[in-house]
Amino acid sequence: MLSLPSVPRRVRTAVGALLLLAALTALVVMPRSDRGTSARQDGAPTRITDGDIPWPREGQAAVTLEGSGRVLTHGAQRPVPIASLAKVMTAYVVLTGHPLRPGEEGPRIEVDRQAAHEAGVGGESTVVVTPGDRRTERELLHLLLLPSANNIARLLARWDAGSEEAFVRKMQRAAHDLGMRDTTYTDAGGIEPTTTSTAADQLKLAREAMRLPVLRDIVSTREATVPGVGRVANTNTLLGTSGVVGLKTGSTTPAGGNLLWAAKTDGTHLLLGAVLHQRAHTTPAEGLTAALEASRALIDGLRARPRSTGSEG
Image 1: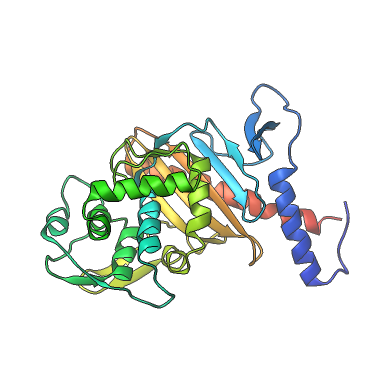
Image 2 (image 1 turned 45 degrees about the horizontal axis):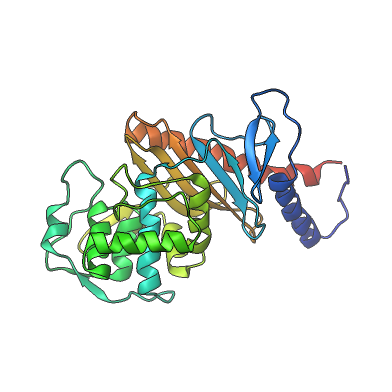
């Protein structure tokens, strides 16, 4: 293997990025046994061995290096409940219709009685809000994406489209426009098990979502203070570790644990991944823990490739 001890640092960084791309696209080998894991490159089915990428042991997953145009998948890419990953599409649709510039708060939105009444109802993830309060669009997006408040998802849907049903139709149109052919949205928050998608489809959304500066900034925030609500923490506890800079968690009993994530490789390239249906039909807490652990192993395994390959003699 080529040794690069005297090559300038910027060249080594570029080579490292190319090697990571190779890890995603060129590690296709003949399977050792029938236990080989299915993968896909540009729509063509291939085979890779179990040890090539540290995929989750269950559910499904997908990864891509931004700009590569290639996606590797693991597990059957069939639609499964995605829980609060639906809120990424909710935020995407809201920001598409009501764009914000970096640092801009946006219009003030009145908290209605329904949003206040739904706080703490039914065991959902919600935040306590006061009817009549006027919160900015950015503040509500923080409540949507950090503590994953379902009552705020529905409030934003009503504000944007007049009703949650009308907003869900906008979500579905956006999914169609992004080529998410295996995705169905039936609610704005993801609490309904009929809101389903695949890991590969969620990567299509992740690419577009991370191109919106305000959304990218919010999902990278560990905690924030929202007037009238207080301090809220991001449910994505991987932030700030393993290069992770986003995106969104999701967990219910039918969905298990899910994580849509974005992680930096060498400071310039972005790895995107989705891990779905971890420990489904257990508890949301158990599923989310499994999704976070599986995602960390996957991210660390992929990020280690350019460093270890480029440093060997």
